[in-house]
Length: 295
Image 1 (cartoon, rainbow, N blue to C red):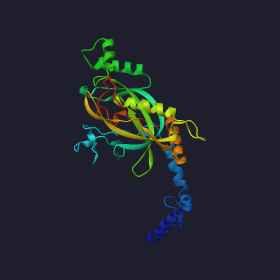
Image 2: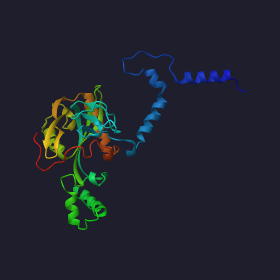
Image 3: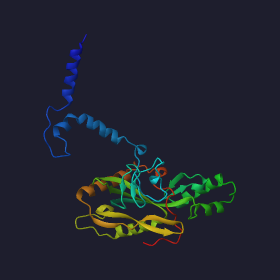
C-alpha cells in the first residue's frame, strides 16, 4: 500500500519528466528549444487535432461597416460594441474596431448569389449558390410557398430579382483577405460585398488585375497591402457609409506573402465555412437603387 509521501514523490518525478530543468534565454516571443522538445508529444497531438478539423469547426470573421441603425451601436443589443461609431469598420468575431480604415491583403475572390428572406417577412438567410439561376430557382420556391398571393412563377421570379429591399436574391462579392489588427498582427477575414458595395469591389478587382508584380514575384492577388476606407454617401434611402475603392499601400513582406499563400491553400481546401447568417450587415445599408453611387 503506497503512502501519501510516496505518491508525492511519484508526482514530482512525473512532472520532472515532462518539464525542462532549465529554460535557455531566447528572443522575446520565441520558445526555448528544450521546452519544445519536452512537449513534442503534446505538440504532435495538437497538430493531429488541427488536421482533423472540418468545415463545421471554422467560422470566417466578417469585416462590416457600422451604420446609424447598426446593432453595434445599440447598448441593449447583443452585438453592441463599446465605442462603435458610424463609418467604423469592425470584426464580427473579435469585435475589434477600426476607425474608418483597415489595412488588408487580398487573397481570394469569389462571386456567389445568396437568397435572403426580406426583413419585413421575418428575414433570414436561405442559401448560397455559385450560379445566379440556381439562386433564383430556390427563391421562387420559397416565394411561392410563403407568399399565398403569388401563384405565377413569372411573378415570383420578378420578386426574387428585385433590386430593392423586397428582393430575395443578392449578388454577393466575397473578398477573402488577411486584415491587420490594431496590435499589428494579421489574421484572415472576409469582406462580403453586396448592394452599393459591389461597385467599389469591382473596381478593386480591376486595380488588382492591373498591378504588375515587381521582379521576382509571381502574379497573385497578395503582392500588395491595400488600405480599405469608408466614406459617407447618399441615395434615395438616406445617408450611409460605403467603402471607397481600396488603394495600394505598399508591397507585402515575405512573411505576409507566405501567410496569404497559406490562407489561399486553406480556402482552396474547402475547410472554411462562411456563415452568412452571422454576416456583419444583413440589411443595415441602403440597397443599390440601380442608379449607382459616385466614387
